[in-house]
Image (cartoon, rainbow, N blue to C red; front, side):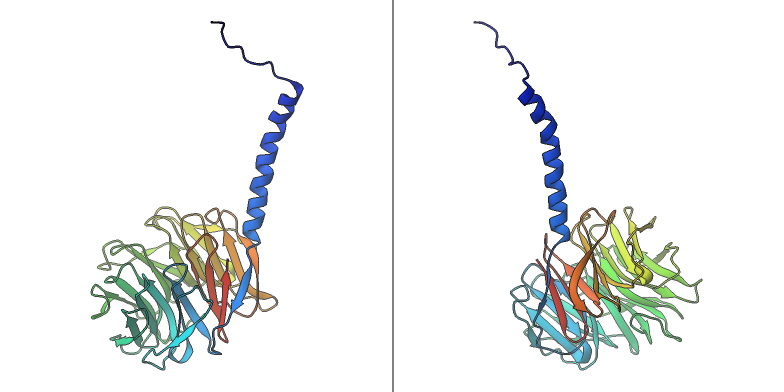
Length: 342
């Protein structure tokens, strides 16, 4: 049997060898441009109350919380929102979901919880006088709430004191794990029942952005070095190692070693960022405010190496964000604003 001979390379073949890589690069660029052009659209919230936080368990089930005890819930990705009886008239600043049934919301001296998707909410104990600004649950038992006495949203108040509360029984009991005479904490993120991070600001401690971390379930909270002289308002971790924090003047810091080292990421903006949410180590959204243009939305698909501005179409602040799918994200703000990206 005669050996099989390879066919000689023709001019056409050489041309294809040159063109093929260019086509691949063009397709990749087109994909990147399409990702940057994700459309944000307003959803009808049915309320004029300002909304401060949102959390989605999946592409369908989510909550938004805000002034006067407002809790809104959706089971269809925001196509419709329904108001739920929270059991409080106090402002609610943040919400955390675990699956479609369990959620917790925190605010001025109050923690409320549901175990049935919001059909009923129960007021849980809280630290007297604490203004809780952030909450995060790792599972239906282990969670943390953070804030301070006299916390001022998007700022800081004299006479406050950074506070961290923890629970290991779904909020039936809350224990104070951390307390300081000064400073405020604005947000918290948890990856499991042992690892969590809280961020804020302490003007009495050199005026630097605060980052605290626990790796033992809240028994100890250790400071991490931010080197940022501004308040830090939001935090998100996609796993035990990879995390991001956002704050005043468009600051974004990132870590790939659980916070042992934090590095600034370039955003090309000087607007305050109030919330951040990553669905994995590559894809994230940060939101904030710009008085001159629409509410700030930044998006990344490379872990923050590059951040792309997106047109939210919303005039005013965006205070909270939740990102759960390839293109599924929600952001909330004043006057009942809810925006969704697909």
